[in-house]
Length: 613
Image (tube, rainbow, N blue to C red; front, side):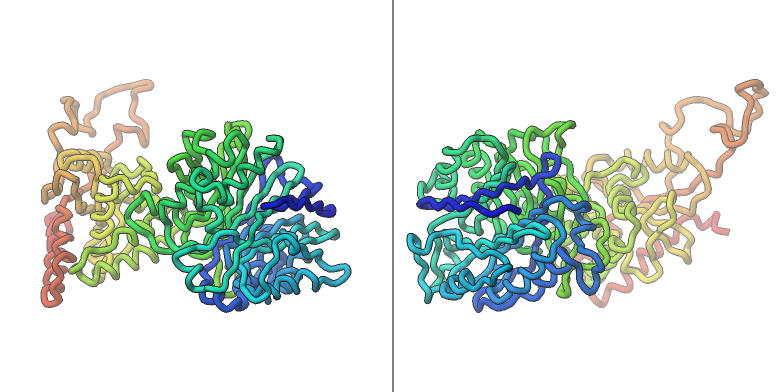
């Protein structure tokens, strides 16, 4: 990349870079959602996991013969990589710089560091060797002098071109987080300027956590307000990206307000987006208003630019909130998630994604998980998360918790369509071909039905002798080999017990070879009636002759093998209310557990006895 041109203003530093970052109108971005590093930050300790992740991502490592980034974002175009606040210790700079300089594609890397003594930062800036990375401060020490004794919360921004010049700019956090940071690190000082990187096709504004939170309209001295005033002096000739490195444990409404303000006040009248990279915060909550933000890691645009919202993907989940549209990283464990960021206008020609985050890879203690594979299905993630958002009630049998673990294991081992099939069959039963949106499980009726259904399924799976049913085309999530029958757990969020019975009668009449089926069914209006499902008076309203009757038809009406008039084997199906399963796991009594299970198995086995031989 060409040399950087610095323009120091009173409250910000602009760096002009004569280089284009976007590819085809979009920007390749990779967000690194590390584990929280609060303890290491207090002592400016090394972050070896972060260094290993950057190594695997950018140049490869022991388990990655090639850079993992090449698998996440193929090609050789420029990429922006963002890591959270306090991702690195000051002592990690040399190792990370070596990695950056060996990277074989144009790169901008933004990563938080600290808490670091001011003198260490000043010594870093003057310690560069000839031919090495050019080191810069994003402020003039003569105008905004640091205390050499106090510590700073800072960020490093590398700007790298293969076989060219590599730069690294240190910038400082302007606003302390009041509840923890300002107390736990009493000698922490703040910066007085923000950094503005102006590429030929994109403005990038890297900020650190609390710098983003104060809305421009509420505080004229806030970074938001200062950025708004600075942007007002520039022509609207390129998109703007505000980048936030965060260490935020848990969502609070202040972040929703801050993102809305950035997009619709600070960036008003411009083509803008906000990218946040937070630490992994793996604590699901039942409240969808909070849980939909996941770990806050994601990319966002003004709601008015895409009122219909973008599509969800396995790696990222669409988000719509007050004034905000975009996508967040779906999983809340440590991960690297990559995809193309685009700016308005959004349409079928320019693209319908704020962030097409289509690849994600877990992060382990050794670095990036190998090999890099496609993200698990949205259904697998959302079912597992749903069970954590809605845990068993107090007093439930331990077997319910064991069964939930077994569901989780099944979700991980299933083929890509398995989790969706489990979700659809639990809510749609024999009509499982009607897909259920895994990102709509927060609907009150759907959520209530799914909790009941999954807890019943988990309880049944915990019983010895009941295993997963895995034959494609067969009905039921479970089977009992000793009884040669399948079990379907069906908790409908919208239909009545009578409707369930009608659907089961229809399934019975469809015919075809199938093991006996026992359905534990219920709806919001109550359980299905116990008993074998017989032909309903509304199953066939005609007075047609029996299937085997010879109608002496010829020509195109003559019977042919496989047509709908061919005799089929009638299936047999019986219903039991889901309350029978609830009786096993609710109001747990250890002395009564075996008896409850035996009674349940006896109910299942009581059907079809006359035809079992």
